[in-house]
Length: 331
Image (cartoon, rainbow, N blue to C red; front, side, top):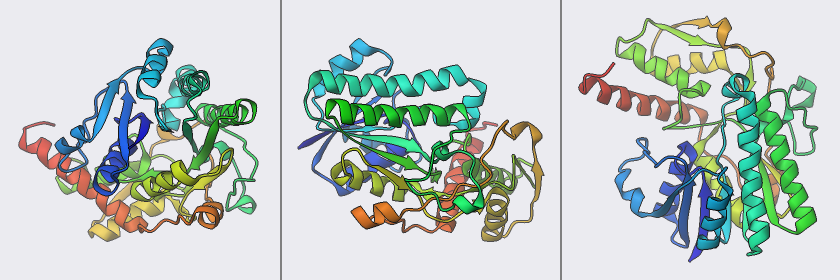
């Protein structure tokens, strides 16, 4: 079997990847590294997944521990997803966000270099790397210039540049993504679509007044379902070209305000909208829409899950979670 190491396995995307591989692929022996053990309350039944992979609890900043683990596992593939992935959080803790995201990646690839075992690395980046763009720049291609506009994005650009240096300078087999906003069941309410879905559920349960609180309602983002993201990563880890960068995106944009309207229509609910000034960031990209032409052309991937379906799956996730909390007498 092929040994696959997933960093950040305990998170939202990690749980969905393990679920997908366990149910659809048999050729991978899955190893995962994370600081905390997985909970995966968004996958049913989650308990069966814990037997489908080898979990290694570790801090990716702990260089001796990471070197020991990689020497023990000898992975043939590494999917590097571990990161502090919130743009809003990076404004609150910029030093930690930048140092964490760049150093954990550097620790991984430098250990691969020293082990010299030929592991293939897929480095997950972000659409935030493109920064503030105008409507004339859209859709964003992999050739579009990068102008990161927040601490998180600067760290992602640094990560991609490190990948290029190690691919060109040391011959490491690395390819990169610039993954656009994704969503789906299990996503933290620190992210906007999940936060909106959660508020709708709270309103439905009488736990919140019928007003949806958002930040800047006019910004445009390109959202892709987490299951489509996983399909892209599976293709890229096996067939992505060494040294190349690929957008993973839907190619369609939605304003945050439109998302509220769409979910209200889907659920037949009447809500108001209140923009919270405290949630508006110092610098924000007014619009981000990507082109997925390169990954379609070179690897045959395309998104297949409608955005409406993603919204409803998120609503159902929060409805189940909040219903369970109410049954247990939690607030």
